[in-house]
Each structure stands twice: as structure tokens, then as C-alpha cells.
Image (tube, rainbow over all chains, first blue to last red; front, top):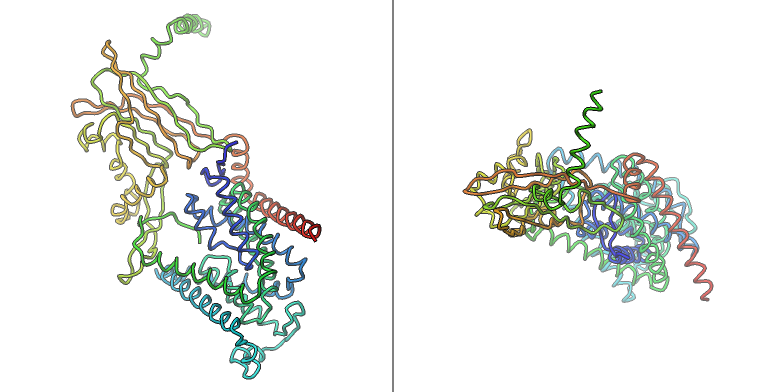
Length: 307
Length: 261
């Protein structure tokens, strides 16, 4: 039997084992950290010769499977906060629409790509560095809780001033309903600008701004990504015809298995260890992007679309 | 009555052709393709189409295989602030073939002067005029045309194989030639064109051409048609299957974990 498979929509032939391996790796990261993995998978698919628009749309399709698998595993473990997830999702959808409009305005001004690139480097660099330093501090025993309990931060005071407070029992926090909605909008705007699912922005937001426990963060993030990517898949298939289901199917077979393994490892690691690993990956992606901006490209043109 | 008369003429002619030695019929054809159709099935991974024929002695040859032609928009990168390489808008190429593969019997510059090659459409530079003829004119298209060629070469969609055509002289003043046209794994369906050019004494001419039908077959064709014609249902189906596979794997792993404990 041939190890190569021809993709009907992409119009390209790819190696089955390589695709399964890529799906497994990204699924593992998805289950481990609660990220969709689009920021990793889409560039890999483009490197294999898949057109960027098809790579991004088909990747969204396979993330649906990985996040469904991961969400189910976390649901069984009792680590999905559905109430928080729905509020973040509603905010994310609204923020995504605002972000798309913002990009259109910036494209008109000819500054969109500079703005997107700067957002990427600042966001990834800022989040990665903060997570890394904070986790190292916690590992050394200087707990963040001690500092926050004695002197509430500006953020904590601002958050406590918002109306319509409610309990989120699964996350063991009490916040205003507006908090997850507003943060969802913020992440939605950034996701639309950066052209990614937003998992690696949402996870730090839930950990540091919503103060949710790390294990609930991962399950809740996957729950939200499931709906975001399902929406993207249907829209891309209906409007642009860019979803290659054969590509997505091979990737998702690898990714659902990887997601289960990732979830398994997630339960065995301490929250600080997870945060350090996540921080290292975010910083590595930032470093790769920065290098891409600094090193003269091999070819000065590329296909449009993708993340 | 007229139909009967025509039948009376055609039937003996067909019988005559059928009775002629196969070699005699084949000898008259300057260009033959080993296959008129390239099927894109589920396990397609590139293909080679054998081409051969017979031409009068004294010619150097070029076989040019081109895919469907269309507009191509690409992102272009420029240096910003003297430091960062960023995407700065798009460049539009008016007419670019999806595939362009040339096999020649000699070095390209020995076939004919550049102006002749450009006029006939042999070699990359012959594509530039069409590619940069966008309306409104995109001045960057000319600057970036070599980059377009490098991008397509990297995908094996553009290639020039000098000495890819083999010649074998016959004592009868004819030359048999053959070439293998290598089609890459990244191949879109459509009508492709294979043209044979002959060159002698600094001039060139089109000797023959054939159509090559590249088409999707079986499950590949069915999925492609469904994706194009029923996009919404295709998308919903893709999501439902993905969710089902995800949940089933979750259940399977969950049971496995229980059993293990």
C-alpha cells in the first residue's frame, strides 16, 4: 500500500506517516496545554507544500476533533468550567468581529502587516517571559498568593469593582460576569489580528487574570476552542471551499491520540511545570517569528492566506 | 443516400488503415503521448508521461508541457526600517501556467536566439510578458518575476530539463525522439498541453501538439465535487465527523484507562 495520499481539495500528495506524526505531536500539545496548536501546525503544512488558505482551514477542522477528544477527557476528570467557557466564547466571538474590522482599516492604511508582526512579538514575548518568571518564582517557594493576599494589585481592585458578581464553582473563583466577557473580547480581537485560534493567549488570561486553577484552564480552553474551530471550519467550507477533509482526517487520527496522551501527562505534571513548559514553547515560537523577520527570506514572494 | 455514399468511402479507408503495418502509421506522427489521461486517484504521487515521435533529421527539439493558465496573486516581502522583512501587500501576475515543464535535446541557448524562444513560448523568459501584463499594470511584477519562478521551481511545478529529449537517427533521414515528462505530486486537474517545437538554422517552429487530460477519479473526484458544490453541508459533515472521532477516541481511551486500573 502506498504511503502517499492525494488530497482532493489541496491538489497535492503528502506522506501519510509524516501527517500522522504531525497530528500526534500537535494533539499532544493540545491535550497538555489546552492550545489548539494552529500556530504550529499551519506553518508545518505550508512547509509541506499545502496552500496557506487550505492549510489553515483544514487545520481548524482537525482541531475540532482534538479539542472534542481533549474536552471529553477533561470533562470526565471534572476540569471543564462550562459557565466560564461559554462567557469567554461569547466575548471571543464579539471580539473576533471587532478584530476583523480593525485589520480591514489597517490594511487600508497599508500598516496592517507591521501592526500584526509587532502584536505577535510583543504578545508572545510578554506572555512567555511573564509565565516563565512567575513559574520559576513559584517553584522556588516565593508564592504569588502571599503577595496578592497582603496587597491587592490594581487589577484585583479593578476586577472587584465590577458589578454582577457570580460564583464559578468549578474554578473556585468569584468574578463579575463582565470579566470573562471583556477578556473574551480582548482575546478575540488579538486572535483575529494575529490570525490564530487564540488558545495560547487565552490560557495565560485564565491563569493570571481570572485566577483559575491550571488544570481547569486547560479543559475550559479546549471546550472554547472546539466551538471556535467548528465555526471556522463550516464558514471556510461554505464560503471559500478551502477545507480538505482528507487532510484533516489523517491529521485528526494522529491528533486525537496525541490529545489523550497529552491529557494523561497533564494530570501527572504540577501546575508550575506546565506553565514553564508552556512559557518555553511560547518563547520559542516568538524567537522563530523574530528570526523570520530578521533573516533575509530565501524567496521574496509567497502564497497568500494562512496564519 | 448521401450517408450511404459517405459510408461506402469511409469503410474502405478504415479497413486500409487497419491493415497497414502499425510502424508505418506511427512513423508519420511527430508527437505521441504514452497516455492521454493522467488519473488523480487517492494514492497519486506524481507521474511520468512518456512522449515520443519521429521528425525529419536536422532538428533540435523542445517538448513543452503547460497547465491551465490563470491570474496569480502572491504576498511580497520587503525590508522595513532597514531591519525587518515584512509582507508589504500583494503582487499580481496576470497569466501564469499552473505547470510549465520543458525538456530539450540541447542546451537552451543552442536551440535558437532568445527572441525566437520567447516568441514560441520556450523557456521561463517567454512567460514574463504574459505574467507581467496585468491591468492595471503592477510594476513590481517584472521585478519579482524571477522570485515567482523560484517559488514554482521549489514546488517542482516549473522545470527545465536540458538534454531531457533523447534523439536517435534512422538511416532514412528521419529521427526518432523520446522524453519522459515528469509531473509533480502537486498537480491540479485540468486540460494540459504538450507541444513539440523543432529548431534548425536558428529558426523554430511548432511541429505538433497534444492535449493531456489530468482528472480526479474515484473518491478524490467525489470529495472534490462535494466540497465545491455543497460547501455548507460538506463543512457541517466535516465538523460532525471530527467531533464523533474525537469523542469516540475519548471514550475508548477512558475505558482503556479504567481497565488498566
